[in-house]
Length: 136
Image (tube, one colour):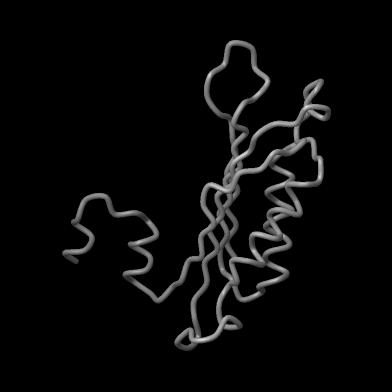
């Protein structure tokens, strides 16, 4: 239990301590996309950042790409959905989760964050974003 008393311990690390789980990450993916409901967003688009974590419990030692989640396939799924203009980024995230689960049926969790880096809010400095977490 010494592990649990250490500082800066994430929930991911705690879960990994108690059972064998692998997480595959895509971090700080940058896209110019045309998501949004406000006037002009469909014309000019905006900058978005995506973070994706997919979790699964390996059945055997992972020694081949077929036994894991291929991050190239993950990236292509995210890229494909980010290229389709959509009103809400929540919808984009849910669609990504659905396709990832279909592609990798053995996964047991997905967490995706999508940030709108420059939202069209007058005198606003910062980001807006959403997180969708799915457990299977």
